[in-house]
Image 1 (tube, rainbow, N blue to C red):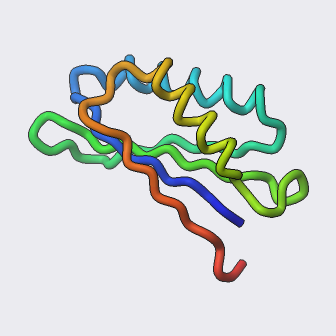
Image 2: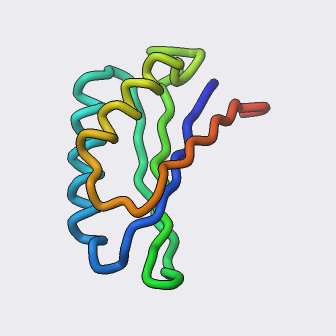
Length: 101
């Protein structure tokens, strides 16, 4: 199953607003994509005034056994560009597949 892990940096002063944006953004994605599973994480300690955040995307295996498609990945990135304004620097996308369950 193909999963996405997207990480980026957020200024500490913008963490509350960034969390609101990201939570709303992921809510919109889940509403548009039945079976989409999302998580929002951040490192517990900031460095140089920036915290590292990570979005995780997977699909419910009963809905889409192959996981996050390339077209869904493109939709996620398009929506992120529209909704996430508190990011400093680029979003880095990593793709992983399950090797065992």
